[in-house]
Length: 162
Image (cartoon, rainbow, N blue to C red; front, top):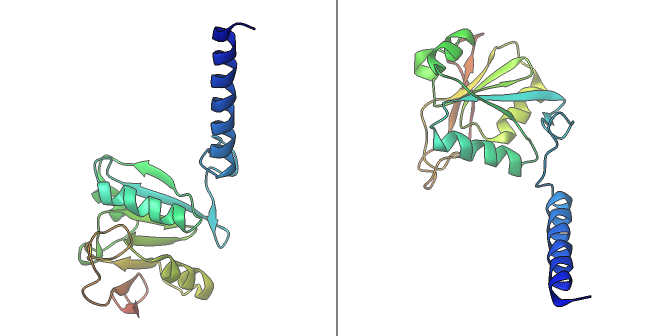
C-alpha cells in the first residue's frame, strides 16, 4: 500500500469515527423519524417565531437541553399567529408555542410547562409577557420573579410566580 492510499484510509476512518460519535451523542436527527419532534408529557411541541429572532433560537436550544425537540416554524407575521391563538396584546412575547392543546407564550421555564400539562386547567394556555432578563433564552441575571399569566379562562390571572 502506498503512502497516498494509507492517508486516504486513515482520513476515512477518522471521518467515520466522528460521524458515529456525533450520532451517539444525539447530534443527528433523521428527518421524518420520531427523533425529529419529541414530546412533553406526550404532547407535540411547535415553536412559532420570526426567522430573524435570536432569542427564540436560544429558547429552542434550551428546550433541546431539557430533552425536547420542538418543531420550529418561522412565520412571516407573528401577530396573526398570536391572534389565531387568542394571545392578548398585554401577554405577548417574541414567540408563541403550541404544546398539545395549550398555547405557551414567551420564555416560560420547562417546569411551568410541565405543571400546566400535569394539572390540565380549563384555560387556553400560559404566558410570560415581554422578554424578562434571566428567563430561558434571555441573557442576564434574573432581576425579579417571573409572573406567568393565564390565557383564556380568567384572562390575565396569575397562574404561577417563580
